[in-house]
Image (tube, rainbow, N blue to C red; front, side):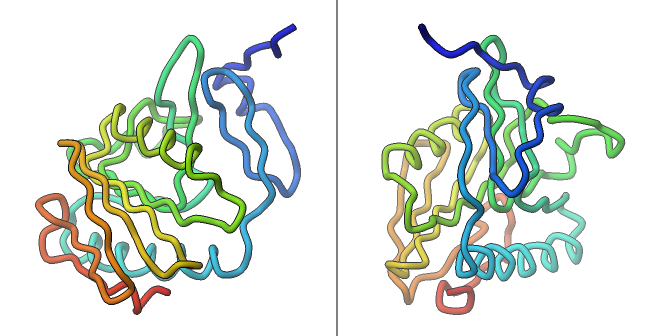
Length: 179
């Protein structure tokens, strides 16, 4: 018998201490917390993005565990490691629960146990629901991939630079500065 499907509202009421949870097509996905390297890389990039976004007034950066409702019936709620929402698309600051939108920029920092197929499924969900850029950072291999809404993809070596492109003009940071 297939598992009972959960809703985004039920997810809000679910507490699984010390675990990372998402809802994928109504199915609860539970993961172990990320390790130190993952947290360090996520924070370094969130800090740099936040400085840029505050200085330019471009919108808002949110950190890990911020869920976004990407689909309904069955519900999908994803939580990126770092996300940027442009000023024009910001939800009401008093929003409780999960805003029904995909951020403009999504950052996923891989953990050693992340599976390529699951990561690509996440990237697909983000792009389908409005993300213009998805950066997938692989600290272990010291590389990154940039996925765009137009279907193009770029592989960055350790010496590469993450670029905000037309979404966050004038933002860039070298991979080495965050790895």
